[in-house]
Length: 252
Image 1 (cartoon, rainbow, N blue to C red):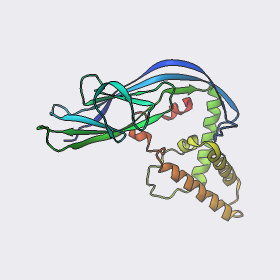
Image 2: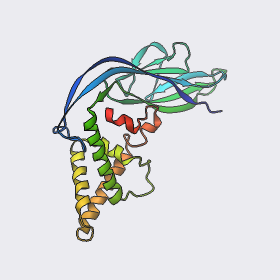
Image 3: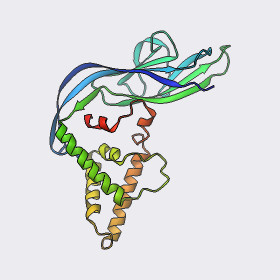
């Protein structure tokens, strides 16, 4: 029988808040311009994960980011994400539970969890249970509503341009997901380049500018596919209970 990994609780404990300023002339974003002023809220996020194996007598262990952990009553840093700490047993009693905690003020980070277990007698072979990726964060930034409205309108414009003119080959190895998620993720030189490409494609005449039009479409499709198949692509949040809805995006 296959037993599930279940996120039992997810809680946030606020530790502070302060004003922040972001100059998007120095750190370009596709749909953000000028200097933004907002409020950052810092917190510690705690997630309790449980391997629900019913009444079957199993000896349970955990692998966190590829490293087997030793049960302890304190929180220890995760090997691949030091801003996230773990504790086992997570509920203080049962080894089939694991608790994860973010560091206040930290960016979003993720850890990979793998359950291992043996059946009685204890010398039976080690078996692998379910695995999952859990993401946590230690801060959110609240921006003025009118700036977020302008950003959403910009995303929507470029999404329509992309979907109208760019053909993404099928099948895509990873789910393509909403185009606006890719657009929202663009930063630095990549955002400047993609914006210029989309602006240009929108105003070209395919009959007169056929070669340039085709090359720009192919380049945009390739950039999107690289993101879609990357660790930050559309499937990343699907492995976590921390999946953000579109309504969550403006806060970041």
